[in-house]
Structure formats: C-alpha cells, structure tokens
Length: 103
Image 1 (cartoon, helix red, strand yellow):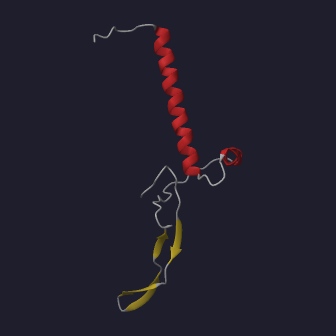
Image 2 (cartoon, rainbow, N blue to C red):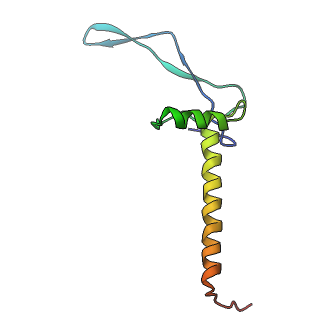
Image 3 (tube, rainbow, N blue to C red):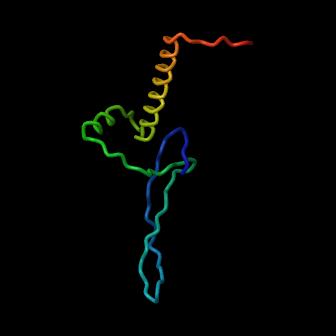
C-alpha cells in the first residue's frame, strides 16, 4: 500500500485468465492487477464504513472536485485533532496551574 499527499487512486484491471492445473483438472482463475498512472503511488481501499444516506450526502457536499473520500476524511481527522489540541490548551490555561521552567 503506497500513497502520496493523502490521495488514494486505484483501478483494478482483470488480466487475461490463467490456467490453474489441480488434480488433473483445469479451471480458469482470473489474475488481478492494479493499473497505476505512471509516476503515481496509490493505496487501495481496505475498509468500508457504513453511513446513513444523510451522512453520505453531507460528505459528498464537502468534497472538492477531484478529491477522494480518503483525502476528505484525512483532512477532517486533522481538523479534529487540531480542535482537540486547542481545547486541551484552553482547559489547561483556565486551570492556571503552571510550572516555571528553568532556562
């Protein structure tokens, strides 16, 4: 799994079928390959997240043209982390218990 700039882009291509010989019988087994644009690194989707139609519609409306859901969710996660950091900093500041630092 590879990725650059949080973007995920992958297309599955089924290659010509290959013959698998087991116990003197032949059966066809398709090979799957990833078609990747030259110079791009990609990550494949590994999980599904069930959401309601309303949440899906909201997510879709937040997406920029050409933006993947992976990238959108990654941005949302980073925003939430920053929000929590500032909330923690505010809580600590309001508590007012600081330790002087010696330089």
